[in-house]
Image 1 (cartoon, rainbow, N blue to C red):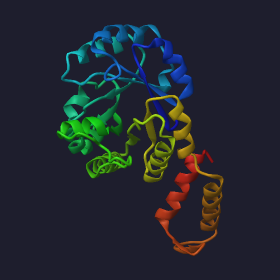
Image 2 (image 1 turned 30 degrees about the vertical axis):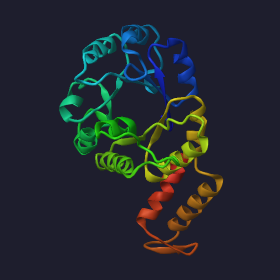
Image 3 (image 1 turned 180 degrees about the horizontal axis):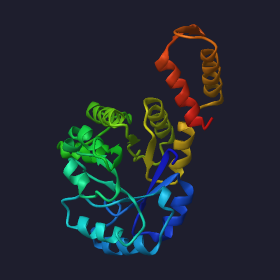
Image 4 (image 1 turned 90 degrees about the vertical axis):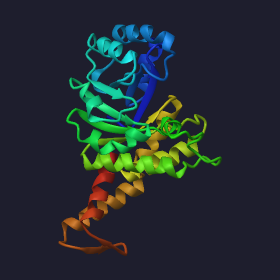
Length: 264
């Protein structure tokens, strides 16, 4: 699965195929993107308009909501196996979806605090974080400064979820960029996500897919340098000098990650 995950409202089946073709994976959303009055119709659309199982994630409603049981019942009538669990905050909640691969969305204070616990759950395959619900859970009013930078509490949550995912050997997914027209801001965040170790970035508009893919794709120069470095390492042993830098095991793993992202 590639780095661009596109949310699509589950009550808009007319968009399902387009979203699936545009992105590396589509997240059919039964939760925030759907008006509560339309959720029954969204569940019907989920069943009636199947997509590729390998590249489709279904976001259900929170475990403690009235819609959760209805969402799970609808899932049982499909072949989908990967579920995004919003407002995840405990292993008990992940266990409520024991028959599915779960992407645990750590988007509240409790969820961020429980990130390591969630990453240890056998059926959790990835962690994602979210800024806006996090700030709401803290009683705040904005996740970003006026210039677009995340506030420190959001940066902390992002890092905490990434580290917890890594410690649990699970994938980490970066949060959506709500300013659809801010391609430079999204590009910078996605590039930072890739360099930091996120496996993917979620998005809310098809126009954001290409920006994310480009940001995750190493440049020709990065690929060349990584290849040259690993070639030099194959002809030596132990710590060595390369282009003025001291090279050891971790730096070699960085180069290997560049080539993996490039598909080399």
